[in-house]
Amino acid sequence: MTSSLTPRTSLVLLVLAAVLCAAPLILPIKGEFGGTDDAASKAIEASHPGYVRWTKPFWTPPSPEIESLLFALEAAIGAGILGYALGRRHGSRRRDDADR
Image 1 (cartoon, rainbow, N blue to C red):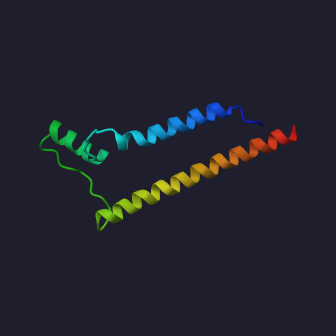
Image 2: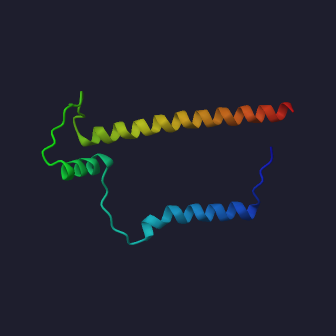
């Protein structure tokens, strides 16, 4: 299977990707970084001020750093599984095309 991208199209896509990566660093937009857990907690507290949780976590990480580590590890494992699946699919398509 041959690539249908011309060198010009590849260059345009590369420049577009670079602009998308650089834009948040260059633009003077200030924002507060927060997770969905914080946003959900605030929304629940605003709509039901006396809400009490009816479940408890079975384990709480000892520090925020450990929590971030576990989150990054989960993301890395997911990316590895996705990459493996896409690679297998790509490889099987190449074999099918070679057999024809």
